[in-house]
Length: 118
Image (tube, rainbow, N blue to C red; front, side):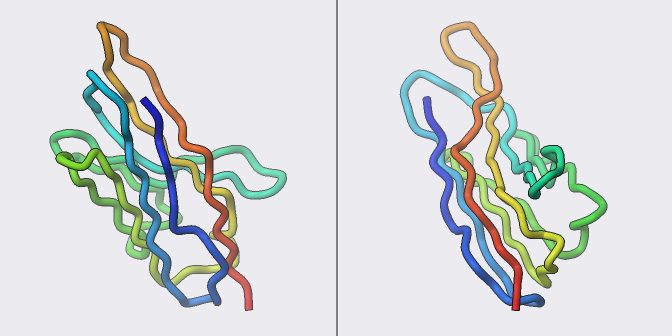
């Protein structure tokens, strides 16, 4: 099972970006998916997660600006980021809590860089 993230890039303050992360492989199911981010010199932090029952957990710093959604058929999670600020600049990592062959584990994507700058 692997995760493939896309959608990062350079955007001006106030702009928008949409990140996508798709899980692929065989014989697996996903409990929750989500996004973390890590800014230079800082620890990795939660951005948002979405569970199978659509329960959503969102960091206070992005509430009202970022929206997480999920396509359970395509095993894909999205992060719509609006009103971006320079402090949103970070490498964004997707995560999936995966169940496969009797094991449950967290799987991380490769990270996609988001730069908010004028």
